[in-house]
Image (cartoon, rainbow over all chains, first blue to last red; front, side):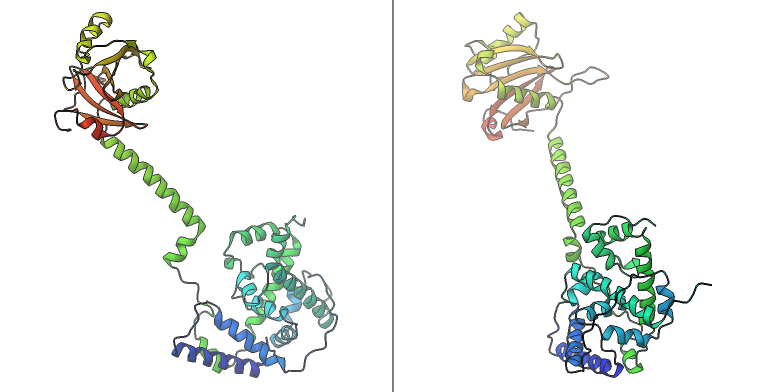
Length: 143
Length: 257
């Protein structure tokens, strides 16, 4: 979400501290994903004052069968930075989806999206990432 | 590979298909994935998603943060509760079906508790009582008890006797007919509360042919009618009226057994 481990750690600790305080006062919400919702808002808050990437038209490419091998050549940090640079709510959708811990309804709920919007954002994200992959890591010629 | 035709919703669901198919929790998603699975497009999407998820898992987590998680799952699976389960439409439907089946079985069991030899015929005759018009009967104005001779002399029916509890009632009419099992039934209409009497052969043991006896009076109910039945000499007598058991109980001298 943040593309910066120091910031991420700060948000994580602030979220947990707040949760501990609420728990001590017996004020924990009944809603199951409140902690993640809270963490998300803190992430958005933390990036509000950051330098924002200029909105630019991103290329799109259909996902190819070679995409898997292209991704394998990436550094985890590159992916984290790419996702953190995506506009909201696409960033939240991609971050939660590839965390592979939530189902689509939970992601839609956390990101405050409808199914069609979430679907559109994920599909667009994949195509844009594929285009970025093609530009950054050209496919290896088949032997 | 041929791309299957997916509905708009299925396409949207396929785009959100979980990376790990074990995570599919709802039927609509399962159906969408099942349909989309045969397309190369979806196959590419899945391998792309798997590769990215693997990369995400490789993102280093600072040790101070990692220790918070220890070996626990990031998200604990939702708790199983009775309340939650009861809200599941499938469970609700099965529960309702079981309640209905149990209700029917209890109803039938309770109904059977009151069964006695001849109760099936008695119920059929109550249906006839409900649909009989006085025009169908031969007009006879006498005491019900005296009709035994008429039944014997005119129709050859032995022991078609009206019990003494009802023998003094004045009759409006009577008839003898055969039911769908060719049993000869005597029907008497009396003035008292527009009551009807039926005399019919008692049920018999299929092996020995002996009449199945039962003591005292038994009640049967059918379509708002109630009948009090007794058996004597292989012939059942039933007094029937539209109403409740207590309307007949006062006529029966001996207590119901």
